[in-house]
Image (cartoon, rainbow, N blue to C red):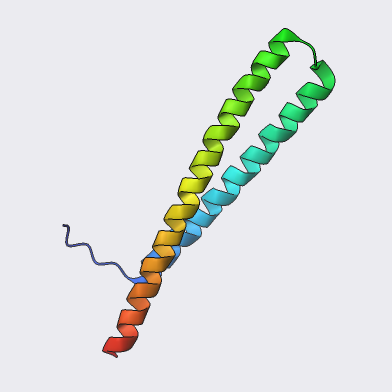
Length: 92
């Protein structure tokens, strides 16, 4: 175990940074979904477009996994922040 001291301000900053990252992931997913829809609309029966769509769908699935992991991490950070703040209230 390390001797790292966590304070609620540092955790709040980490959670805020993670929130920004989460929003970027959501935006990227949305952009990729729009690109996929446009591709289907324009090249529906093209073999190469269908292969590209498969790759886009795989990328979107991976981004969704990253999004879920980031949201879970943010939740754990906020829970730890609350735990620290509650402990400080007890001590003061």
